[in-house]
Image (tube, rainbow, N blue to C red; front, side):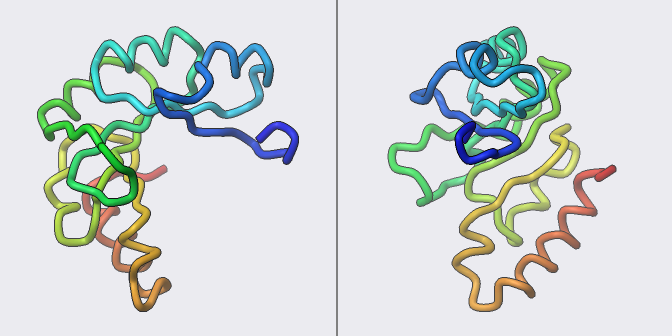
Length: 137
């Protein structure tokens, strides 16, 4: 990511730790970290993450052996840190409403867009639904 000139990177638990990336990349590089527990969220914050991705909230085929969390766990993790948070994992138009009042600052989708027959239409519909749930700046 650094060699490519990217603005940042998102890392999972099996990737390079956030604190090592921060030392290599400096403070202007955006680092997101996947979290599935309050402890992981607090560690991400302490180690210099700029935001957390929290999930998988729903079943997903994007990754194998995904560990799911519940909506109450999502709320607990999001409220445990001052970092911006993004709910992720199996989110699609038909279940997005369940994330209302979860406290997340954003919603990440993959399959809901890339598996759609009409990507532009799917993206527009997802954005419209997300605006009902998440208060974007």
